[in-house]
Length: 302
Image (cartoon, rainbow, N blue to C red; front, side, top):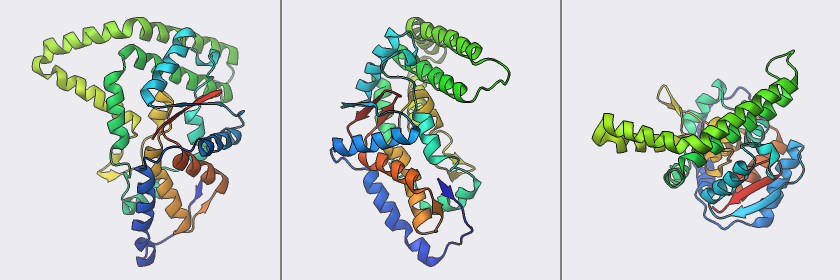
């Protein structure tokens, strides 16, 4: 989205940092009710940009309700999202097409100055609540369904093994997804019980700590907080895991990217693809958490 140019930090452009930070942090923490017309416009523009027909937009109060809805679809189709009314998961493709390779070595110096982490743990707190309420079978079923869906659509566009027919790769992924579905649907809860008993036997009074650590890891993945600091320095959120595994777009997590892009184009005079920026910023300012599939997108309240 951005084209980098040589730049220097000056007193003038550094003075603008608090202004842009306050602007985007206010948006990150907003609890303003969604304007459904604004949401629909932002979503439809994003799908048009992706070359996909306008989706069925479903407004649902909370992310955990969305996960239960998707779980019913996944269960009925034996883990194959492309056979449901939802279609394949597209969060990863959407984010990649909009942002590209924006998190790179050229961005590090700027990121150090901008003092990010604007959502102040809001997404992680919500993810921890969700993690404590959902069953292991639901979590693993959706993980495998979203991941194999992502792999399926990715390999369809760019086959990873030249010379191997797509039908062979497709058949392999079908077998993989079916096996993963059976494992997650029928064995996950049992395996979790065995693990819990084993952890209690081995760790005794620390089994709860182990459970809490797993829950926190899941919340970190969803909130983009995995490997956010490298060598002690803050990095832009790691969104690859949440988009691929959970197929979720979380505006309060993506807000750090918006803050960074906005500052770079307006203050440092970097060239910016206006269409991509317009779509990305509209999704952040108009939507709550949303789960985009080819045919259906679920929008949650803020």
